[in-house]
Each structure stands twice: as C-alpha cells, then as structure tokens.
Amino acid sequence: MNTVFVTNSSHPRVQEITIAANLPGEAINDLLADIQSDYLLLTLAGSAIMLGARTVERFVQLADDTGAAWLYSDFREVNDKGETTDHPLIDYQLGSIRDNFDFGSVILLSRSAALAALVKHGQIPNELQWGGLYDLRLKLSIENEILRVPEPLYTRSVLDARASGEKIFDYVDPRNRAYQIEMEQIATEHLKRTGAFLEPNFASVPESHESFPVKASVIIPVRNREKTVADAVRSVLSQKTDFDFNVIVVDNHSTDGTTTMLKELSANDARVIHLIPERTDYGIGGCWNEGVYSSYCGRYAIQLDSDDIYTDDQTLAKIVAEFERGHYAMIIGSYTTVDFDLNELPPGLIDHKEWTRDNGRNNALRINGLGAPRAFDVAVLRGIGLPNVSYGEDYALALRISRDYEIGRIYESVYFARRWSGNSDSALPLPTMNRYDTYKDRIRTWEIQARQRKN
Image 1 (cartoon, rainbow, N blue to C red):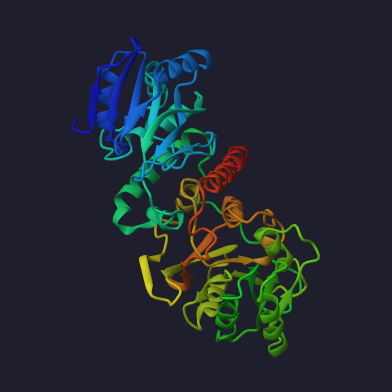
Image 2: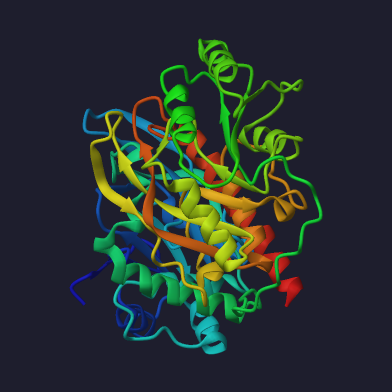
C-alpha cells in the first residue's frame, strides 16, 4: 500500500487519504474495507495541494444535500512563476466514461455508496494494476450522481505544463499499451452492464444506385492556410491510380492568399474543384457536407487536412482497394506525426492497433479519436452527414457509422500529420479545451443512449 497515505482529518465524518491516480484494484478494495468514515477525501498525488478554509465542510454539506456519491471541484492553479489562475473543470455526464476524465486533484467519495455499487455491480478485480479507481467510478456512476462543484475549493501546483498539442497522443503511445488494454477491459464491462455494448454483428453496406462523376474524391476544408494548402492539394494530384479521382477544396471564405492559390491550382488542373460556399456559418463539418453533397463528389470521400499530406503516391489506391475488398462503410488509416519539414516527431506512427473487429466500436467510446485519414462510402455518408462544428465532427460521424457498420483499417502509415504552431490544436487555452471535451462527452452520451435503444 505504498501508493496510499492516510492522514488525520479536521472533519469527524471524513478520512483524508492521498493516493496515486492509477491505483491497483486491491488497494481500492482495502481502502473501502479498512476506512470506516462516511466519506473519503481522496487527494491525488503528483502536485502540491492546499485546501481552502472550509473545503471539507463544503464537500460534505453538498454530499449530504444532494446525495451525490462522488464530488469534485474547480480549483486554483499556481505555475512555476508563482502566478495563480482559476482552473474550471467540466460537468460529468453519461458519456464521460473515458479513463482520462479530469477530476482535478481532490475527490470526496461516499463510502456507503461505493460499497453498495460494488455489491450490485461486482467487486473491483484485485488483479487490476492501474484501474481500481476507474472501475469504481464507472460502477458508482450507474445509479449515483457524480457532482462537479463549480467553486475553487483548493489550490494546487501545475500538474502537466505541456501544451495541448503535446498531450493528445498520450493514449496511443506504445509504451502505455498494457495500461490501455486494462482500461479498455474496464470500459467494455461497463458498457455491458449498462446495455450499451455492441456485439460484432454488422449491417451490410447498402448498394448505391447513384451516379458518381469519379470513383474517389479527396475533401479538404480550408480557411487561411496559404502556407500549407498547396502542398496538400499537390499530394493528392500526385496520386497514381487506375481510377478517376478529384480533390474538392472547400474554401471557407479565406482572407489570406489561400483563395488565390486555389484558383490557380484549379485553373491548371481540372481535377481540382474549388468550392466557396454561399453560406458563411460553416465549421469544418459544414464544409465537409458542402463537398459530400455536391455533384462533384465521388463514390468514396477521403479526408485530408489542409496542413497535412499523403505519405506517397499510393494512398488513394490503397484506400479504395480496401473499400472494394471488405465492402466497408468507412476506413481509417494510420499516420505519422512529423514537423513542418517532415521530420518524424514522437510518438511517430499512430496506428490505433487497439482497434479490433470484435471490440473496436465499443472501445471507441472510451478514447478521444480513431485515427486518420478517414474515408467514407458516400452512399452511407450522405444518409448521415456531419455536425456543423470544427472539433469532434469526425469522431461523431465515426461513432454513428460504427453503430451499424464495420469500419476497415489500414495499419501502415499513409498520411503525414504535420505538427506546427499553426495547427488548430497545438496550444489550446483551457476554456477551449473544456468546451471541446464537453462536446465529445456529449457525443458519447448521445451514442450510448442510441446503442442502449438499439439493444
């Protein structure tokens, strides 16, 4: 139990405990058996914590008033310069089942609610190496409220000072593979308990009776990417195939030199379709819809971001061949993270090998992304469409497709994802990250509800 430190508490009904966030199952079981107080105040190790003047009393008051079984709060954060800023968190919801949901560093846990949840839904497996608290949280959440207190009840030192663009690949780092497998197993059992698990039974992709001008269209939404968009378009034009294809660039009213570049590219090559929407209220999803529902779109729609490029001249051929081999509704490739000059950056290859035919669409509810490039059977895609947002639109679509259809995978790198200061996710401010995380949790909530109804 060297990952658990019990200290005295100022409140007679609370025992204060410092624990590691990734605590073994046996340690959580021992805690619940050994501690006899009404509530456990869990402080997660990793940063210096200073509780507010009446933090414990406030937590207990709200737990008693609401009956919530797991409470967490906003806080203040001090950086290495001694500067203090507010750090709001986001509310928990049905779709907040990811193992990396941010509860901050202080949690109040109802011991009686925890014990009751484990009686009803099964004890925490002692063999869990890291997921004891995660397993408890998911079981507790089925009948109990997990409550965010939107008040800064404590102050902590900065826990992870990396920019958002440096954190987003943590969950696919191969060094964390054993951890990810355990988290997938815990999440999968939760989906089974709540009626949202899907067996690997897939609907057949419907035959299309539409007429398409080409077999494949690469769709590139763009706004103000004069530094990169020509590279992206040229990487498409360099593709070698035995079928016709085009590239539909949806120019979302750029104000730099992007529009001029695209006009020149389309004038010199008829395969470049330069669309400027009449509407001015499109996000990335809306731009995708503009391309997909246009008369220019081919049988398959393939993604390319405006600051990325394909790895070689065979990417389109490989993707279309996979569609025709497996009759998939969607295909997800693999990519390599590189800098602007195509030098490989950690973690390098992002292949999402955790995706399996048996459980990929269930595990997709636990993680924040499914890989790239993404490609779609347009007959299926036109029946669904994308939400008109600029973050999470592809994730929402992939979850919706995976509910009914099988998704094919290409595990070799076919795409260079360039990480540079102009990337939209390179250094997101906290309010933006919170908004994005809330939206993805909401997408998961809707999808879980839909799968429960499907079952």
